[in-house]
Amino acid sequence: MNARPIVIIIVFLLLLLITAGCMQTTPPATPTITAVETTSTEAPTPPPTTLSLTPGPTQTLPEVWGLEIQVQSNGVAIDPLIIVSCQGGKGLNFIQQIDVKVTRSDGVVETDVITKPLYKGKEVSLRGTTAPGYRDRAEVWATTPQGDKVKIFDDYVAFRTYH
Image (cartoon, rainbow, N blue to C red; front, side, top):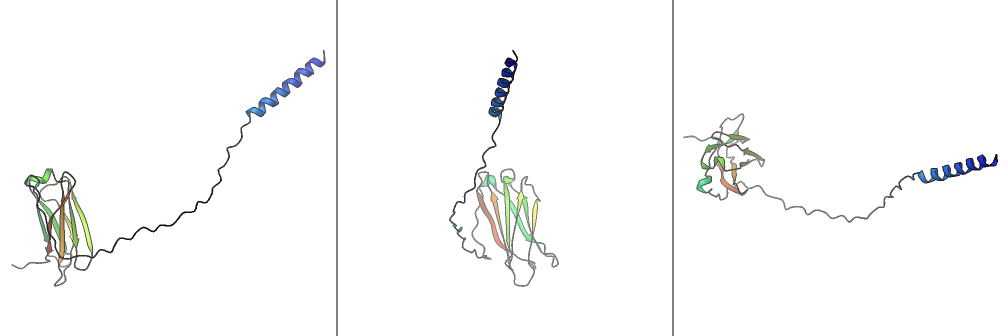
């Protein structure tokens, strides 16, 4: 009878070892990183754009989207600004935004946006130049409800005008 408890203990230990071996988790295999040869394709460089100080054609908004804007210089020599302001019109509720671009005669281009809500007197100011003979060009686009940009102003803005 003494052999029976020993056999039971040995069988129990064997079962314990077998189940412990089955319960053991193996660590996940780490993926090996392989180098993939890539071919370098250079992005095409866009052709250089030349700054144009010559005003181009403009378009007229449909009457239901009509918008009045005013573009003028502040005439202050120490801080020259070109001020673009919304002066009203039927399109105040329909036009999504007004984009403004000033190409200064010294080659610097500045942009700004008049965002909704549009109202009479809403404006943006961009730097201008003062040197004699210099002419700054202002361009203004209105974004229609369909998302089209319509150029509604493109002209020179004089630093000062004498009447």
